[in-house]
Image (cartoon, rainbow, N blue to C red; front, side):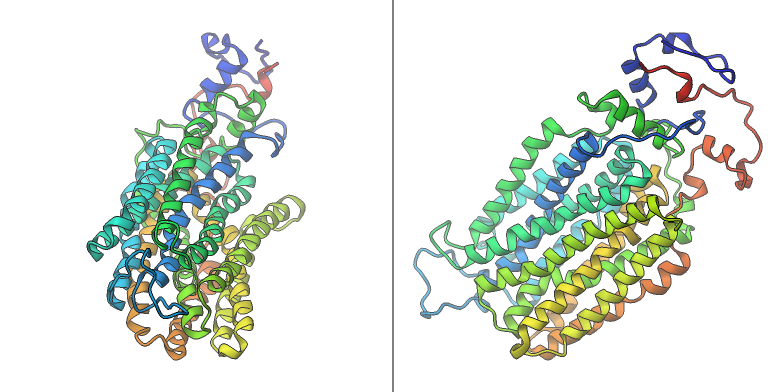
Amino acid sequence: MVVLTKNAVKINYDDVAKSPDQLLRSMSSVHPISDGIPSQQRPLNYRWFPSWRFMTSIMLCFCFGCVHLMNSNMGMAIVCMVNSSVTYDNETYPENAAPLLDWSSDEQGYIFSAFNAGLLVMLFTGGMADKFNAKYMILVSVAIASLANLTLPFMAPISVYWAIFSRFLVGFADALLQPAMNSLITRWFPTSERSYALGLATGGRQIGTLIIIPAAGALCSQTEIFGGWPSIFYLSGFIGIIFIFSYIFLGADKPSKQSCITDNELKFITISNQSEDVGKKRTERKVPWKHILSSGAVWASVISLVCHEFPLMTLIMFLPSYLHDVHHYHSTENGILSALPTVSLWFAKIGSSYLNTWLQQNTTWKKDTICKVLNSIGSIGLGVFLLAATFLDKSHAWMAVLFLCLSMASAGLHTPGCQLALVSVAPAYSGAVTGFTFFFVAVSGIIHPILTKMIVKDRTAAEWNLVFYISTVIAIFPIVIFNVWGSTEVQWWAKSKASMQQDPNNKKMSKASKAPSTPSIDSIDMA
């Protein structure tokens, strides 16, 4: 039934004659709707658990875990793959073991860089995420990464170039995943929930690392299962296949395509996101590249995220090698200790993301202020504790691991910081902005492992300390850059016409629109 208020105007009765379910889904057919819908007349809310928003965040977490473990497995596997790295207590090589590979230090650097070369494609896949079905992009992403891992064990011994190509495919898979995930989050989650949803989803990266590094350490030290190191990649690919079958049935590109979602939850998401410029069909929307390239808020997020990712590359890709070379840990204990900083990062990411949401709801702090404070604390801690680890030798190895844990924990505060800003400045074009940003992350990711392997020739403590010094300097840049130019507010060029008309401070749309208004959600009885 439709009830018209005093302020209601003419509406299309063919549309409102639909059932409540049909009406709401038609409103969100290009979810979320925007143009012509005024701000809600009453506060809306819908429980987080149980809900399909919660399920979506968990599935995204699972997805990130799959792709990231298929990336981070190489950091541990290469320790027992390469002839110069692996050692056996009895000084004899088992007959049933997989062959050791004679890769030079430079070739190992190329293998690690190949992943980031694949990420360069994100400059193009970013725009695709805002136009095409994000669910299909996610499925293709995990399928490519799984195929690359399952084929690497029997192709790598043939030529190092096969290993490089395999790593490139994993990077390409991530180039599909990251913008698709960010675009999907802007459709599924209201602004107030995006920090926490982003923390849960990207926390899958740490969960993937926590699973694969200890497992890889154990699989490295045995030869009964697929000869040792090949089992690491087979396990990674198998986990990816499990996700693909799960997401086919449980995933959805947007709430209106999720057949099991309740009308109340769909209404909550649709109305909460009505002010964002996603009203046009995605295939018809043009990306405002001129505004993106000239936006100080976008560039602040780009630079801050690059400065955040560079030190993390040091810890994620090379931590097992660092602990092996400087503190002389063997494979099994190396795998366990390498996982501890990742545990710290996961807890800090989830905790700080929840703190961001709590502060928005329970304090008078602006969202922008909260974001910058958390980001600054993260940058300071990441750099300081990384630097502190360089003052310790192998006699204080446990303390070095502790400092690295604190450094990684500090990095977790960037999730409700510069990473939240990335999906906040232009939600309707979050895929394009993400692709643009991670293009530069990929460039730095190509440079980082090559530079590291050029520095770490003899695997001495002094060489590794130099790598840490460089990472420390880069880590502290966002303290100034993000605080001065960063923002979590939706930029004017990314807002819907309706929200710009309602904003008295917006000079570009200050005049009232001549188009007739439509009834608010309060004027429609959904019962």
